Image 1: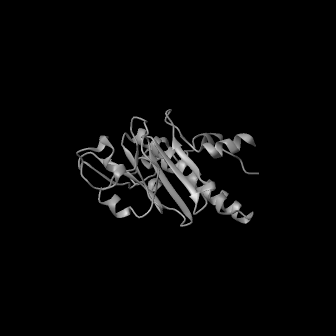
Image 2 (image 1 turned 90 degrees about the vertical axis):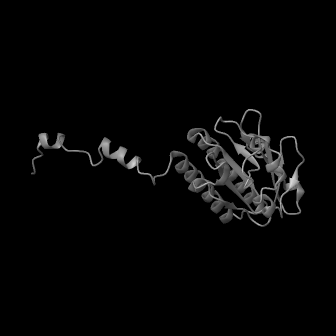
Image 3 (image 1 turned 45 degrees about the horizontal axis):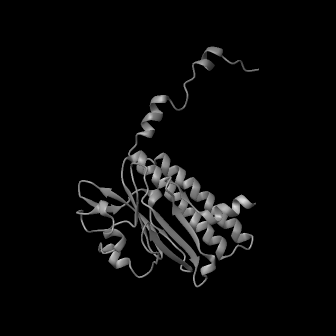
Length: 219
């Protein structure tokens, strides 16, 4: 029967020391906590999409998944803006949404390089509308070139960005102070206005989906 040497057992070094864990965490190419959380949220949404598809899900369920995905990413991006002390802008178009970060040295908005904030394509059977606080609601579509050229009415109407380089501009912003510029985004199936659901910011700085929250509270 083999004999265990107690002294050698207690003197064993762990495979990963405290110092080595710090070295791993300090690698420049690592992922931030926010990025890891976003990946986990997205994996959960992908799983739910797969389950609804297997169970005979339809476009309404898929639309709900898309709007929940956007809500989750916006909440993560808002936290990232605070933790990273940077301003994050959100571009909403008829077929995709994307994120920008403000380069203070260059004085302009640039595409976010964070993996968790990469552009996301939207299904072609969705109709998207956008409303900034105090403005009329407008259906998005066909404005991509104007938006990229800095001619968007949403961009030029944001006084906080007056005087900076006329490049890409966000429809709304997630600020490092924790504030969110007011917005409402509507999702609906094409030519089916009765399916419209809103994703919106509140005066308390929350990002909510009122219709889905009511459904969940009624269950």
